[in-house]
Length: 238
Image (cartoon, rainbow, N blue to C red; front, side):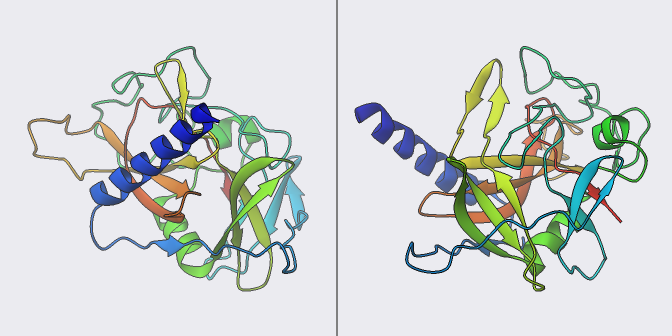
């Protein structure tokens, strides 16, 4: 019981710190908490498949369709692979500067033959979401905190009623899995230059990630992340 309380406090503390560090002007979406007595929102079945992987059409303006699972996962509630930005294979340890693209001036790895793991693992038509696509998802979808087969996560519900589940798999730093069950971290394909010009940080050491929380501050937003940290990947297609 004491260990569980410490975990919750740790997650809450980290969430508040992340919110404080996030840059102004972001699109943020507050999670909606459903009462157990209300109708349970179901995770949508795939609208179709591309190269054997399911996708859901959330009715977004760009017509972007979101995969039902993470790269490396077999089910929506599976975490799948943890990868540094630009890497295509998992490894034992993740350090902030241990990425093939740490310190490299590159703006976008979407559809890259070398660095887009969604395209490489799942084939043509799939890609790592851009920052713009994540922004659109946050703007046009409602967020609900739910569990899928005992796994904590958030449900993104489009205006057409279709939904996609994102498990809160945390992230990997060094060989440690952090914030599992209360935070979700998903790479975008875009670099982040929030700290460019600040001598305390590498000019090209960050990229943008999608961050979800399921604590009392339950939200979804975008923020900077060291490229060497291990995050999950949720592919998109058109």
